Length: 304
Image (cartoon, rainbow, N blue to C red; front, side, top):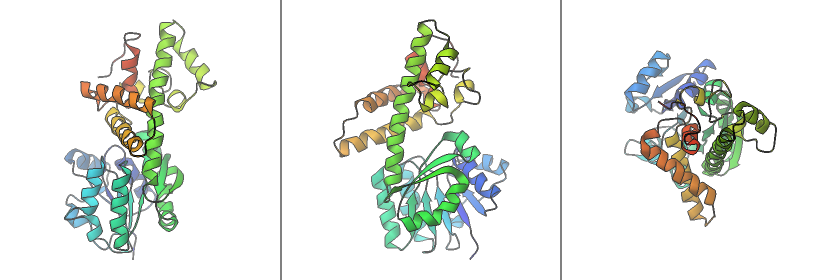
């Protein structure tokens, strides 16, 4: 049977991921509930099927989903017209959504009961990583399912990690993004302090990149404009990874910590800061725009 990939959820991340599969010579059909995203996919010459019922058949060999929340994944996979009731046992299911661990396990268990292989494979690297196929992909699932998925994952990402059993991919992603949310605030506070001390921000940034204060937000994704080209801070904070999505991931981290009685005080504070920022109407801005909150009136730059 010839390979046919269905990609569901072609938003800011899913669209370039699907494009990379097409560029690699794969037959890919895509779907999204958003008309705006469907139109964008058509402009990018992706093969759009506008009715999900027509898209999922037993001829599909792989389904990849990139959806906003656990409830979306659950509905798509386990709903009345769910995927696992339509695909063959030879179909591989790859959920690249960042969702709660319990939902990942629940979906995977239902798939396993029907003899269908599934992995959770959330990604990190933002829109730039999706476009350049340099994503970090964290996989949970059996070694067999991981090995089958690996060739496709390598088309969409650069660093592929098998984290463990089903749900481990999302667990690893939640831990990673908890740290990312905290360090983005830390980077913002550090650069803000340098500004208030009247020290050249560019010089402080260069020092931090080469000293013990370095972090991914400092070296790759700085929260202030004028430091690294191509970052959202240089584009009025147009989202590569939105504040709303970071807020969602910090909530997931908070829920996980409660479930296992882990102490995460910094993550709790970061969640409070991002939650307030989003409620003030900034949820669609890039998460690095949080620098505006911790920066106060130390500088003037737009986040429109």
